[in-house]
Figure 1 (cartoon, rainbow over the protein chains, first blue to last red):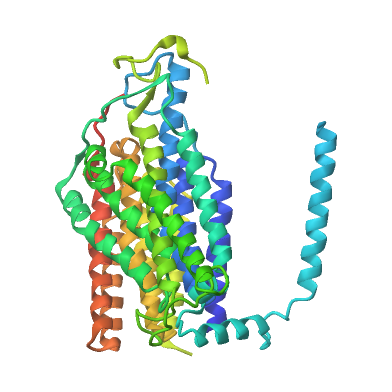
Figure 2 (cartoon, rainbow over the protein chains, first blue to last red):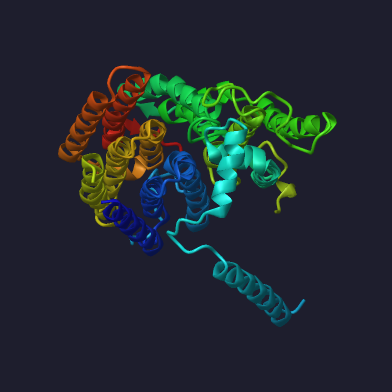
Length: 99
Length: 260
Length: 150
């Protein structure tokens, strides 16, 4: 039973980590990264490392997405200025291609 | 240094590191075996100092000097980000407009904020008896404050978060860690040795000697550092506007001093 | 062999596995909803693991995830408000299923824990888990509109 648990957690981590690399748009990537953080924490718990799992949960579930999305917002605002020549006044944010 | 030279330097360093790592791996105890020499010694040392959480004993007692290094890394990283993210001369602050947050979300944020803060403090305080400790609890507590931004708006967060005290708190907590180490030195043993305080009763809050003190110092350091770090990012993303990013803003700065 | 661990395997493989699929494929609204569900399902799994390993201290993990998981979803809801406004996620069925699963797991674990301080902690985790994820999914479904300033 423990083996099945470890294999499940490992597969989830491998799947989400691969997806985090394969997804190209930073916004979608940050969503995958949040899920990767949670499944990594589960893997650490399954391997009996609750201290590491707690660090991963603390950092990965809210702090990392917040830092990433704030950076994306800033970069997009700049890109918008560069593309639109003096700031598009329209709220729609372009940029960021699909996966 | 020419690119070719740099490549050689990196390759030599990498090859050396790889050789050492392979040599170390060959000498490791077999995976899944029952021989854990290092683990046995760590657990023994941790039990002799009445620390229920062996990981806390390793990080804040047996290898407390190592943790001092890690703390300095975080400190330096946050210091670097603060310098990079500061408001430069060609940027100005625009007042962010309040966001429309629906009532249940706002209520949830205001209700959970104290709970999350308390959870952070709980994790810091119980570092020596259960999983957790200064780093984890500090991050949770710092994240809790930012519920004000998520559930209300940025100005509400700024009201409870003047940056200067948090910067001072970061530095103070880092020095508190150092002072605890020096106190052990003054008391006649080694730097950061866990000899100052009585070891207390096993598996209670008052146990493990100086481990709770160091945990508290790290908790405060991490919480303040995360708040300062996020303040830099939030300022840049929400308030600070480049020239040209915003059409209707007034510029108070001298446009001649442009340049990065 | 342990029923709790078996239940955790099922929740992880079926529940979290499905949310992983959801977060990797499809439009942004589906991905955001799947991210919210992933914490809503991983938290009961952590509770089941704590019970299965007979280590009450592991409940702290579920506690931290129950507190911070919805906060993470609020981050996405807040900072992606513009993108999600035209096409808000409506995952009522899955959200309610996850909430029901969370409540059932909390109930089972608290029955197994028995009265005491540990029970209070499990119940706090349950309240934060179910309430937090319902509120977070509501926030995703258009509970937030960033005032447009640019």
